[in-house]
Amino acid sequence: MYYNERLQFVRDARNITQKEMAKALNIKQQQYARYEKGVNIMPITHLYKICKFLDISADYIIGLTEEMGPCPKSNEKNNF
Image (cartoon, rainbow, N blue to C red; front, top):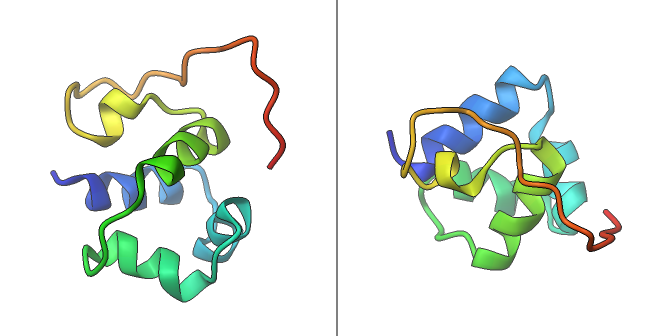
């Protein structure tokens, strides 16, 4: 499964819309949809925000593991 397919799978599993994801990334819904379709390559900065927003590890999204573990907690404060 490619990262774009995993993005859609996790988003659907969390009952989050593409519009909500786009808002969290501060982009338009159409742009986010292009990431899930694999039309556009997603910037690495978006991966960080997505992992925090969905509470999912980047390792799962990029295919390094099959385990849908949570995003590691950090001391850094992020505002979405």
